[in-house]
Each structure stands twice: as C-alpha cells, then as structure tokens.
View 1 (tube, rainbow, N blue to C red):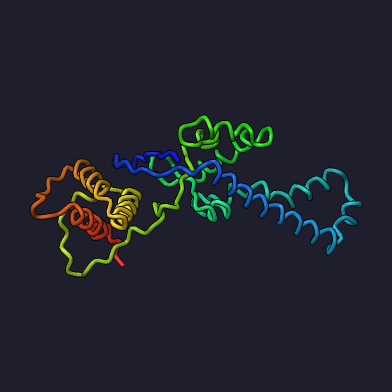
View 2 (view 1 turned 90 degrees about the vertical axis):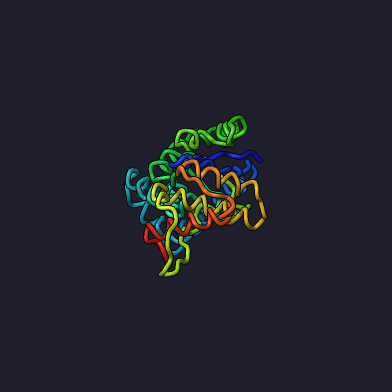
Length: 249
C-alpha cells in the first residue's frame, strides 16, 4: 500500500495509507448491490403494487421518460449525496473503512464531491477501465475524479481516523502554557491528536518526535527537554488549544 502525505493548513505533514484498488472495488460492489436492491424494490412496488404500468400507458413518451428519470434519480445521485452527508463515505466505503479526503488537509466540500461525481461519467467509461487505469498509474491510486477535485481515498483501518473529536477534558482551574496554539485550525488539531493517540497505542516514538518537532517549528516554540517530554508537550498543546478555543467538555 502506498502512503500519501497530507499537508495541513499549518504545514504539518501527516502520512496516511491510501485505499487499495481492491478495497475501492469491493466498496463499489457493495454500493452497486444497494443501488440494484433499490431499483428492484422500487420497480416492484410501483409496477406490481401500484400498477404504474397502467398509468404510463395513458401518458405520452416524454411523461413516461420523466417518471423513469425520477424513479432512477436516487441511483445516479447516490455517491454525490451520501459522500456529502457521510463526510466522504458511502455505505460501501464505510464497510471497507475508507474515506475521501482533500490532499491539502482540509475537509472535502460539496464542490469537491460534485467534481468527483461529474468525472465518474468518464471514469466508468468502458466498464470502468478508464478509472481503473488512472488508479493504477497515479501515485495515490487516484481516479480522474480524485485528481480533478484534489482528493484521495485513504484507509482508516489503522485507526488513522480524521473524524475523531478534538475535544479534551480540561479542569476549570487549568492554566495554559502555549498561547501560540491559536495559530492552529480545528482540522490541524484533529489530525495531530489522532496521530498522537495512534503513536501512543503502538509506542511509536519516532512519530511522536517528528510530530513534536513539527509543532515546535510551526509555532516557533522552544521547549526545555529536561522539563517537558515530547509526549507531555503534545498533550499540553492539545489541552491548550481546547482551552483557548473554548472546546471543552
């Protein structure tokens, strides 16, 4: 699996594992089965239960086509609507634990999902061969829609989850140490916290060191290592951010 370095708005580089072609194909198949199930249920309901066919016989061809378009529209809009509502996921992507993200570190917007959806028409050309070739030759397994929208699909299976909360319990008498943390954004802090917690779970000292050094560099901080360890430093940064932004629970 390849990795993608997502650069946050404060130039904090965090590495994520890109979703494999196999994972994306399985997610696509799951979503396809859901869409097929919808079509079968819808047409059975309207034609067998509500006898829509009898009604259509009395309409002109334009009206008939309009009704068919309305019935099948949810299938066409399925990826666009669900990725927008589920923050870069569809039921298939959720099952496979993969997600669409912006490679610049920001949360993907509706416009980004719209671009991906429009380019799907090209990516699915020749039974999806165009999109498959694009994912094979691109560095980050990106189809044309990903490249055009500046997005990539990452794997969440290693607990590198960008949707974890940035909230941190803070005592009422807590005294902050680094006021410079207000220069970070919510998304920066979310990514910092997620990777910090992951590094703690697997005792990855190298990641903690790199993360600590990067934060110090961005915020222009000098910390005496004899008075504060790297782990303590990052933990304080997280708490200070919550203190100054009022995000306490």
